[in-house]
Length: 347
Image 1 (cartoon, helix red, strand yellow):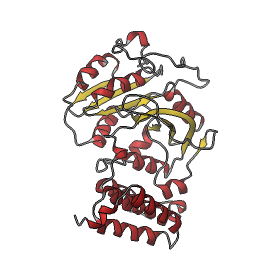
Image 2 (cartoon, rainbow, N blue to C red; image 1 turned 180 degrees about the vertical axis):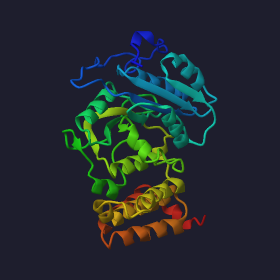
Image 3 (tube, rainbow, N blue to C red; image 1 turned 135 degrees about the horizontal axis):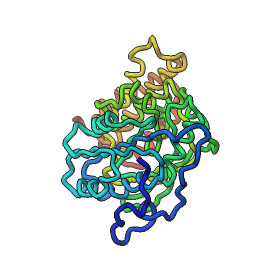
Image 4 (cartoon, rainbow, N blue to C red; image 1 turned 30 degrees about the vertical axis):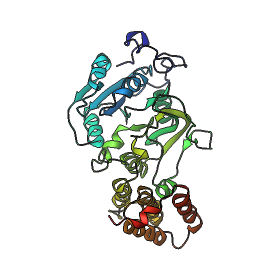
């Protein structure tokens, strides 16, 4: 399906102005390719009771003016206005359903199985793509055929859609393969998933989205793809990323802490096939996972014994180094954030 013209879409709610309610920014017409057509893109939006953000999010996808878009919405049985909004845009959707599921990762996989595009991503129902986001990612992958996926950086918006201080973009201002695998493993992050595009065949080869993960499924799939196919970085904002109290990246808890450890365990479960670069970064990867874990327990103010366990493992995998950074974090967390109560909690 070609993306609809803005005149075809329903009128925005009263008082709504700016992207994606209107085309106040430049949106490309379909640029011609020298060798063939633009690849089909499949976008899946998992959603549950995000009606206050959903329509804006849907319009940001549909108004990309991309010539071959497959747009799928998997709703988890919302009881707010979400289904009403989905039906409002049903003529431009490839598929949608509203039924209970087993969480966001399960919903993404349901959409993945319904998709047929060469390029794939999931688009959260509280985020908005920037104008021309799909074109930029698709073009980057076409020009760099070895890439497993393409990603850029984000502009931050609040729950009312007002732009906040931007995420700091990569200081390198040209397009290129990054981060290197060694850095991705040492930080357990291989790019920014919202607004990126992945080669769908690599997503499937990696086994799809791990449904045991509920917080860091994006880190997981991007790392698994990046083990064999490097990511391409686009020095451009690809998504408006919404920061609000309910967003998962604001939550610090046991599950989010242990999920990163699960990611590393999966990578090194079969050491026979991992590359020398992956093997060389094993300690750094485990250090990153345990560092995040002790920070999570400290921020969450619970489980002192687990905080200490992961703190000790962070030290173990650091080979005695990293104390300057570690002490800075402890001082910031304990004094600036006043997290003293963890030392009196036993649960």
